[in-house]
Image (cartoon, rainbow, N blue to C red; front, side):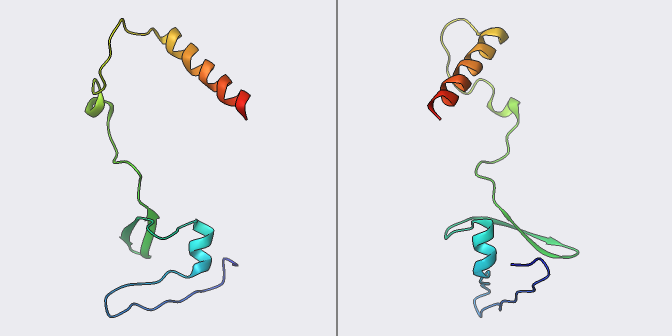
Length: 91
């Protein structure tokens, strides 16, 4: 679909709008896709809803139990590197 091509749709009596299939396919919005609707000065903006709610580190810090001594930054870096290598080796 060319960017200049204008597509139209109609609001139903229930207030529903069907998005043209070309747009749904290009955006990979299948049935059940949750969208955020934003009213802007230029019109209505639809964006995929985030999968998870936004959080701050202080909201989740300490939420997972841990036993044993804390890991050092070097140990964490080594763990991340080892997992990266493991995943690259399988691909």
